[in-house]
Length: 148
Image (cartoon, rainbow, N blue to C red; front, side, top):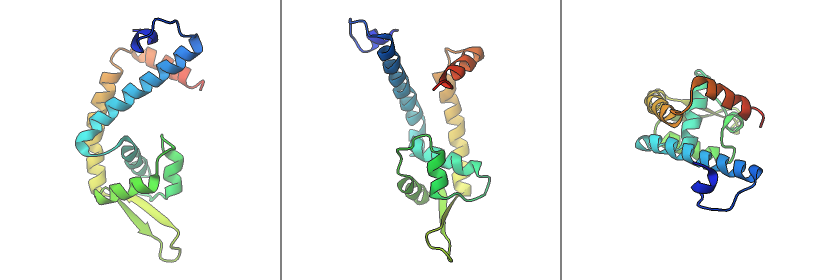
């Protein structure tokens, strides 16, 4: 289905505008599918991103600055996300005794376990989202995305 049909207009949209609208529509669809997959876990996509970053630290703590740098969505309030994950028991915040401004964040065993369960659900969502693409097409798509 073309963009004009999706947004219910009969007017021909210029190529650049059509491309941007298409990207925005795809972004929304992917975000909705991922959010829906994470909903049973009570986790937002941004919280999921924080957990994945912390798991990638391989038991080494991260600070808020590290999390901010690696977040997919730079608009997130990382402190608030970490606070919510602490309440769920998925991460720990350790304040350095000698320098109270230094805060280290680590993922807990419960966080790793929950993240492992989320990985399985998200893998299924990714397969569904990308079902119409071959591996070759996905490689080509990623090459095109790299031009951004």
